[in-house]
Image (cartoon, rainbow, N blue to C red; front, top):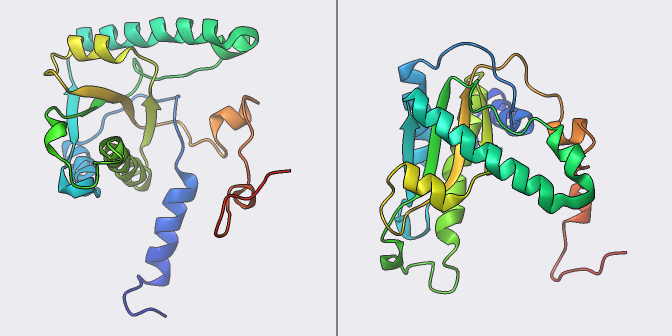
Length: 216
């Protein structure tokens, strides 16, 4: 065994959290203890970032009126998304796509302002700042699963409207509304798979060697 590897039990826990992480939409009553929330945010803050730019910004929503306003933005985009889906509109509208009102904690994750100053690793791939924020969100998501808490990533909102609501500075951009909290149970498989919306593709269809292989 590699001398730097974790013990069998520790490795199993890491892989279990990865396998059982779910995008949650159903939340139950309860709270997130302050020390647990602090651990989750520290986990997010430990994410890798291109050029060590740490582009993530975390906004904890505590005011009920703000939570309701965010729910309104999500609902407005839900309707517009349904219209854009055409024939699948009715099917989409039957899906539960967020838990903004029900979750114990609501977080907005944003890209910070003045990102143009960070060139290292972004000269040809400026979107690496978004990739870095995504790593932070995944860290928080996996840590939450280990704590027995659910996380739902909501992306149904108009970014500028949410930025205006939360007084983000020019150049900053919200990328995720995260619903966080206790859940009645974790979905055994992704919810969209259970609802028949989509079927995950197996790894072998997405894994190539040396070049992009032609698909049948």
